Figure (tube, rainbow, N blue to C red):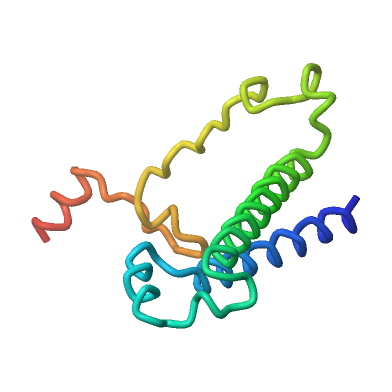
Length: 129
Protein backbone atom coordinates (compact mmCIF):
# COMPACT_ATOMS: atom_id res chain seq x y z
CA UNK A 1 0.00 0.00 0.00
CA UNK A 2 2.89 2.34 0.79
CA UNK A 3 4.46 1.63 -2.62
CA UNK A 4 1.18 2.45 -4.37
CA UNK A 5 0.88 5.77 -2.53
CA UNK A 6 4.44 6.69 -3.55
CA UNK A 7 3.68 5.74 -7.15
CA UNK A 8 0.56 7.93 -7.20
CA UNK A 9 2.56 10.80 -5.66
CA UNK A 10 5.25 10.51 -8.35
CA UNK A 11 2.62 10.52 -11.10
CA UNK A 12 1.00 13.57 -9.51
CA UNK A 13 4.31 15.46 -9.40
CA UNK A 14 5.10 14.57 -13.02
CA UNK A 15 1.65 15.68 -14.16
CA UNK A 16 2.05 18.95 -12.23
CA UNK A 17 5.36 19.61 -13.98
CA UNK A 18 3.76 18.74 -17.33
CA UNK A 19 0.94 21.22 -16.66
CA UNK A 20 3.45 23.94 -15.83
CA UNK A 21 5.48 23.26 -18.96
CA UNK A 22 2.47 23.04 -21.25
CA UNK A 23 0.94 26.25 -19.94
CA UNK A 24 4.22 28.12 -20.38
CA UNK A 25 4.61 26.87 -23.98
CA UNK A 26 1.11 27.91 -25.07
CA UNK A 27 0.46 31.25 -26.71
CA UNK A 28 -1.96 33.68 -25.14
CA UNK A 29 -4.97 35.12 -26.93
CA UNK A 30 -3.04 38.29 -27.70
CA UNK A 31 -0.43 36.32 -29.67
CA UNK A 32 -2.84 35.76 -32.58
CA UNK A 33 -2.26 39.26 -33.90
CA UNK A 34 1.49 38.73 -33.94
CA UNK A 35 1.07 35.42 -35.73
CA UNK A 36 -0.65 37.18 -38.63
CA UNK A 37 2.47 39.31 -39.20
CA UNK A 38 4.76 36.32 -39.71
CA UNK A 39 5.77 34.94 -36.32
CA UNK A 40 6.17 31.53 -37.93
CA UNK A 41 3.23 29.72 -36.32
CA UNK A 42 1.98 28.41 -39.68
CA UNK A 43 5.32 26.79 -40.37
CA UNK A 44 5.36 24.82 -37.14
CA UNK A 45 5.10 21.06 -36.82
CA UNK A 46 1.34 21.10 -36.12
CA UNK A 47 0.32 23.89 -38.49
CA UNK A 48 -1.30 27.22 -37.68
CA UNK A 49 -3.96 25.91 -35.26
CA UNK A 50 -2.73 22.36 -34.75
CA UNK A 51 -0.30 23.26 -31.99
CA UNK A 52 -3.00 25.10 -30.05
CA UNK A 53 -5.32 22.10 -30.18
CA UNK A 54 -2.54 19.66 -29.30
CA UNK A 55 -1.24 21.74 -26.40
CA UNK A 56 -4.70 22.47 -24.98
CA UNK A 57 -5.69 18.79 -25.17
CA UNK A 58 -2.39 17.74 -23.60
CA UNK A 59 -2.93 20.24 -20.80
CA UNK A 60 -6.44 18.90 -20.24
CA UNK A 61 -5.13 15.32 -20.04
CA UNK A 62 -2.39 16.33 -17.60
CA UNK A 63 -4.89 18.27 -15.46
CA UNK A 64 -7.27 15.30 -15.39
CA UNK A 65 -4.41 13.03 -14.37
CA UNK A 66 -3.36 15.51 -11.67
CA UNK A 67 -6.84 15.74 -10.16
CA UNK A 68 -7.26 11.97 -10.34
CA UNK A 69 -4.00 11.49 -8.46
CA UNK A 70 -5.05 14.09 -5.90
CA UNK A 71 -8.29 12.22 -5.24
CA UNK A 72 -6.38 8.94 -5.08
CA UNK A 73 -3.95 10.32 -2.51
CA UNK A 74 -6.83 11.64 -0.41
CA UNK A 75 -8.46 8.22 -0.60
CA UNK A 76 -5.22 6.48 0.43
CA UNK A 77 -4.57 8.95 3.26
CA UNK A 78 -7.91 8.08 4.84
CA UNK A 79 -6.62 4.61 5.68
CA UNK A 80 -9.60 2.26 5.45
CA UNK A 81 -12.54 4.25 4.05
CA UNK A 82 -14.82 1.23 3.57
CA UNK A 83 -15.05 0.58 7.32
CA UNK A 84 -16.01 4.15 8.21
CA UNK A 85 -19.48 3.18 9.47
CA UNK A 86 -18.18 1.49 12.62
CA UNK A 87 -14.85 3.24 12.89
CA UNK A 88 -13.86 5.70 15.56
CA UNK A 89 -14.41 9.20 14.19
CA UNK A 90 -13.61 12.62 15.61
CA UNK A 91 -17.23 13.00 16.69
CA UNK A 92 -17.15 9.72 18.61
CA UNK A 93 -14.02 10.54 20.60
CA UNK A 94 -14.19 12.07 24.08
CA UNK A 95 -13.14 15.72 24.28
CA UNK A 96 -9.67 16.46 25.59
CA UNK A 97 -9.82 18.20 28.97
CA UNK A 98 -7.09 20.73 29.67
CA UNK A 99 -5.31 20.45 33.02
CA UNK A 100 -6.22 22.96 35.71
CA UNK A 101 -3.88 25.98 35.83
CA UNK A 102 -1.38 26.19 38.65
CA UNK A 103 -2.02 28.47 41.65
CA UNK A 104 0.94 30.71 40.86
CA UNK A 105 3.00 31.36 37.78
CA UNK A 106 6.19 29.95 39.36
CA UNK A 107 4.56 26.60 40.07
CA UNK A 108 3.89 26.14 36.37
CA UNK A 109 7.63 26.32 35.57
CA UNK A 110 9.32 22.92 35.88
CA UNK A 111 12.07 22.92 38.50
CA UNK A 112 11.05 26.26 40.02
CA UNK A 113 11.16 26.65 43.79
CA UNK A 114 7.96 28.07 45.19
CA UNK A 115 8.44 30.29 48.27
CA UNK A 116 5.92 29.81 51.09
CA UNK A 117 3.19 32.41 51.20
CA UNK A 118 3.52 35.10 53.88
CA UNK A 119 0.39 35.50 55.98
CA UNK A 120 -0.89 38.84 57.23
CA UNK A 121 -0.01 38.37 60.98
CA UNK A 122 3.54 37.32 60.13
CA UNK A 123 3.97 40.32 57.87
CA UNK A 124 2.66 42.65 60.60
CA UNK A 125 5.08 41.26 63.20
CA UNK A 126 7.96 41.53 60.80
CA UNK A 127 7.10 45.15 60.08
CA UNK A 128 6.92 46.07 63.82
CA UNK A 129 10.45 44.80 64.52
